[in-house]
Image 1 (tube, one colour):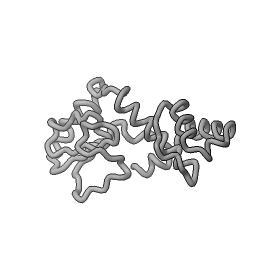
Image 2 (image 1 turned 45 degrees about the vertical axis):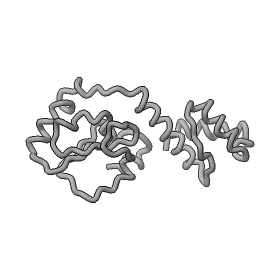
Image 3 (image 1 turned 135 degrees about the vertical axis):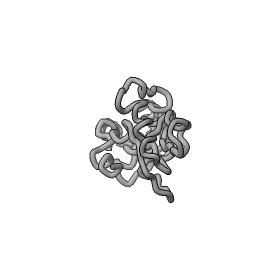
Image 4 (image 1 turned 90 degrees about the horizontal axis):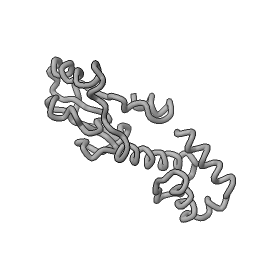
Length: 155
């Protein structure tokens, strides 16, 4: 859970408890505070709403701000292509593939990413349940967002 969002949301509700009773006002407060639009502001636990806000914040960041820097990393950038191809894998999964830069460089690669339309499949890592098996997986910088428990679940 994103604790910065949690603390800010708790502070907003503490200062203005009426937010809980008025979904439109809650949506406006979230838009003004976090610069994202969240349609569903109903929640059983505040963590549910925090996760929705966090997903929207990450989506905006990865769609509009983030830029690939893969070429500047000597060992985990383009060099990984040769290392993976040496294995002669039948199927390769690129988790958090971003712009799917390895797609035409590694045969039989499938890229998943929740926020980038260049992915073969737009899906969150924990929501991806493939029917096929993979001989190799790449996860360059994609398993470091969220709480420790979320990161361990992704691993």
